Picture 1: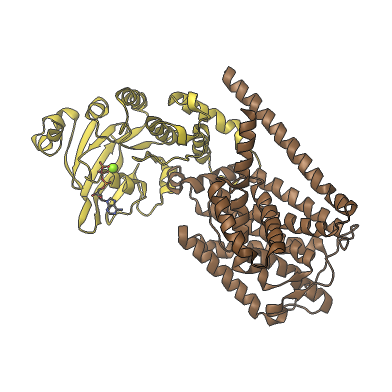
Picture 2: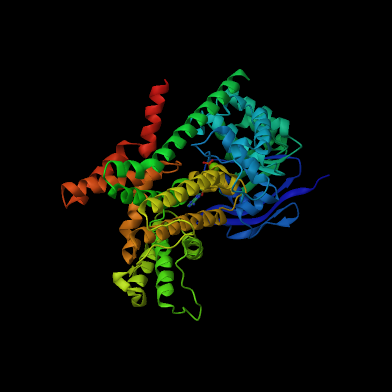
Length: 249
Length: 339
Ligand SMILES: Nc1ncnc2c1ncn2[C@@H]1O[C@H](COP(=O)(O)OP(=O)(O)OP(=O)(O)O)[C@@H](O)[C@H]1O
Ligand SMILES: [Mg+2]
């Protein structure tokens, strides 16, 4: 029952003299929410980028559900069951919430070399899309162009797009950043609702959210995991307090 | 619930309204030769034919440029190659010579048009496959460079007229229709334009079209959705090249003349201006842009021979102040009227 879904070994990535990942090793147990916390510039986004295939590591191996990801493109990794959200939302801004989600559903269904039927009338896209909007509390905004949504709604849509892909492993890059307290709490509730069904790597600065959600926490500083353990262990860890939690006061 | 019903009803109403306008427009265009003859201005027919043919090219470029966001600065190459297919087939038809041992001559439109599309499809596939490995400014420059290569190739191709091009003494033949009649050729071009634009409108509303629209807005997002964008961009580039090839083949028949000028980079630029002027990523914008540009060129050309000096700044102003081109203006007008 303790299958490792994501196994990262000795990951190294330098930008010039700067080590964004420094012999980083990391294991994520299937079904867990595993939080990765650390100060700004610690290399959290770069870590997610390497797992997704957006950033090529200098060295190291990444294994997902027993399969090596080395050399696979981002789309190939997504089709294996990985999905991410972006810290800075990357959405189809000119289109509606529904269009965005329908495209994600379409992507999950296979190739898109279909030239004739209109997507706007396609129940096999619209029905799953409206179900996802309902679960993500976006139904009321279905027809609104994404450019007109609030920042919090952008974050919700980021998550909804990832969920539309029905991933096994979800990589969340600061899903609560920039949200108000009530939006933040709603996001925690949505993620709690997914707990157990989807494994999650959660990068987040909001410590209340992290301690409410995480099964395990790893602390990343200067590209290195300096501590890893249960939330209680991390809270008690003196080195972590000094390096990170202490700054929060 | 009530709100969605209202939205649906409004959607259906505006859709029906749009269809009515479109059908009216096509009927009007179809009646144009009759009007022109009645007014004693038969040269209008030739002008309208040119516009309709260029509308095919602009709408095709729009698939790549307006929908997929592929800023190709070389689409005149496909237009010119399509025209040369007609010219070269006609040349061999007249001379009876074989090309590479194949008896390829033809003056049958039902052969020459598909041949033009096939060959431009192959050429744009080959060059698209290379050019699409780049993006952004690099892509603009590489499409321009390839188009210039093709341009100089035809300039140097003395066997087919080189610089001087090829004269096509007679338009291609079509069973039951005499294409030497300008009216008939106009109606044929209009029919082909309508069918091609309807086809493009299906394509952009399809799953394939949804992917193209996504590619334009955010490639990283598409990758994160598990979509490898390259094959979609390539197919869009090929389809758009084939449409320009079709336009070129028709233009060769219309003008009864083909020359490397058709692939000059300024022609590529004009296609881009038509798309942007009319409204990139809209169905009929590029066709309207084609009409607008040709009419502007003609009007200014009548006033002064330095018309380009006026046209350039005029275009810049229009593109700056009419966000979304002619179709943006149209939407604004319709919007204020509905309010
Ligand atoms: N493409 C790049 N080129 C050069 N340096 C980079 C690049 N990407 C990231 N870096 C650097 O690598 C370090 C890690 O960046 P990263 O974005 O992974 O940090 P982070 O932990 O996500 O920070 P934050 O909490 O601010 O989001 C930073 O110092 C950043 O400036
Ligand atoms: Mg980050």
